[in-house]
Length: 316
Image 1: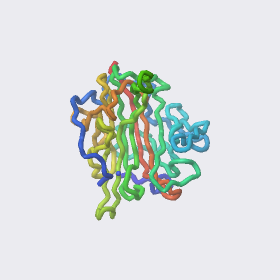
Image 2: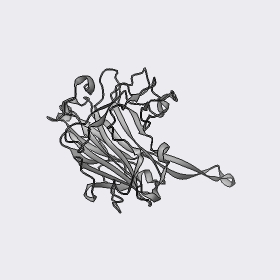
Image 3: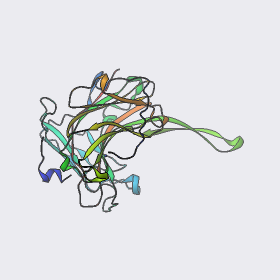
Image 4: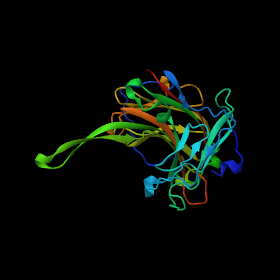
């Protein structure tokens, strides 16, 4: 198991109470990794000159309505800081950890310290976002084309996880749907149609040793979410190392979730659920992004995760 130097790890979720009911899947959808690879919506991190350009204090529009520019971005133009929540504090190309994809020499380390509003400490877990510029490169993809994506994720040894119970990392899709709301009263009512963004996906939840009388740490995948928008528990993470993560979006508006330990391509057997999250029918896939979380106490870095070869596909 790779042990990254402490200067990179920064010493860097039995599981939070979430809905235990897994949504029934009417279909398993498209297996992620199917169809045509969109070569302008991927990154393999093999370029040795790959760099992250932070460009000053991060944005925190979700918390204080501040969109700070110029935003952070990658030197190859494929990645951008989130204006909603800002960028992780540490984004670095590193040698691929052992047992990664065959032939891979470079991967991306993601870790954050001061999540939330710059210069403030909330003393509660908050998140920063790193976004693939999919919509800028290929446009928003209608679900009639069955867009889907895969990515490999590496988790460090248990002793290098940040010592708090909860979410430490997320992999999610940005989606859009259309909603209609009735406004006004009596004879003056009218239907107002709006485009609604939402973000289904996965979180990695962690339970440290010693909490809830646990003798050993543990982690699990949490899926967000079911038809009501509730989270539910996916596979347990028994040991650190690589996982393959995928999502697909089909013409019926459903979102399909796939997980597999290791770096092999996903198959039908890796399906962990399908849903209309929040009751929404997905109409457009916008992009994928990563959430990096920390305690936001100004002292302890969040858990370092490594990602490799995020790829977007389309059947048509």
